[in-house]
Length: 223
Ligand code: E4P
Image (cartoon, rainbow, N blue to C red; front, top):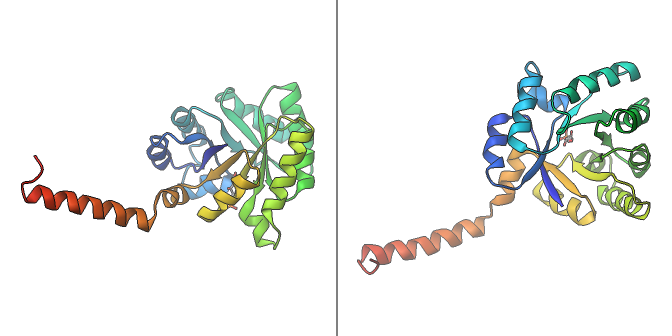
């Protein structure tokens, strides 16, 4: 299992990478625009690659097969070892994925997936990663854990190379549920990663221990 950071905020990525728990990063057009990173895409993505030293997903925004392939080649040329092309599921997604993986040796992350059917097709097409959207599946009233568990079972049974990335994580419990359901990876935003670290009872315990120690020190009993 592994944790990726779902962000294009270089300052936050730099801070959290120092914790030693991040193996990769994911971005999408919305995240890039919200973080003010879309204008300097190449610079920002290159900085993220240097920080994370692992796979960094960059999503295609073109909508025809030829244009998607051209955009994918442009992104991949920035750092072929680390850049993973995020292909939104839909019309040309499987063809683009298959061409990138099998003909051009470019890794893909097929994204925006809400169902087992979609994830199965993407894995068969040769995707390195299949991204299942936990929060957005829940928004529709379905159970994302069932989608994750059935996708994982199929990947293992058929010995496919795809790894499941679960994104659209909204709460810290989503992380636990997604991993227990069979995700290989969860991609988590900086605010949720920080919440995962925090527990009120831990804070109280640490404060209690440190107060006892300070009191003894103030009484001159600790040298
Ligand atoms: C990650 O790969 C996804 O793009 C991201 O987690 C989507 O999150 P959202 O559903 O909160 O937009």
